[in-house]
Image 1 (tube, rainbow, N blue to C red):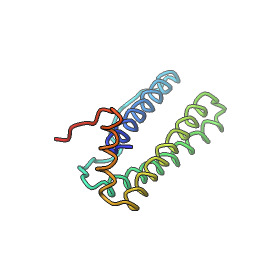
Image 2 (tube, helix red, strand yellow; image 1 turned 45 degrees about the horizontal axis):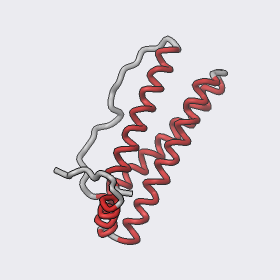
Image 3 (tube, helix red, strand yellow; image 1 turned 180 degrees about the vertical axis):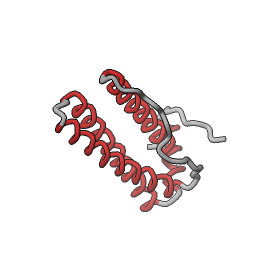
Image 4 (tube, rainbow, N blue to C red; image 1 turned 90 degrees about the horizontal axis):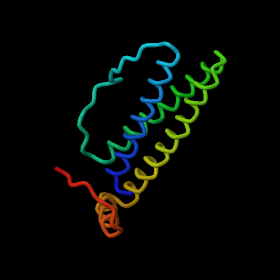
Length: 130
């Protein structure tokens, strides 16, 4: 997999989670306020990027599991199920990041170039870096 495509797919999935959570909050009569959970910073090193992505996914899995537990205590099956589905998807993201990190550690920076070339040969569009 080409790293930018993986990051793009995960970002779309994360936005979908936020949308689903916001809809659930509104359904339950709450207010939604969108605020970043931390300051972003530019990353250019793939190893650093993947390690941070894994850390964020692990933290997210833990917090979503806690939210599902609380929803269960409150006898809110729909909210519990929403968080449980999100946990499963976050764990898939974590597995993908872990695999990419291992490929980079095993094969070095050449892995990214080979992944890009393979994507191009298979006819997959590859984003142009600026």
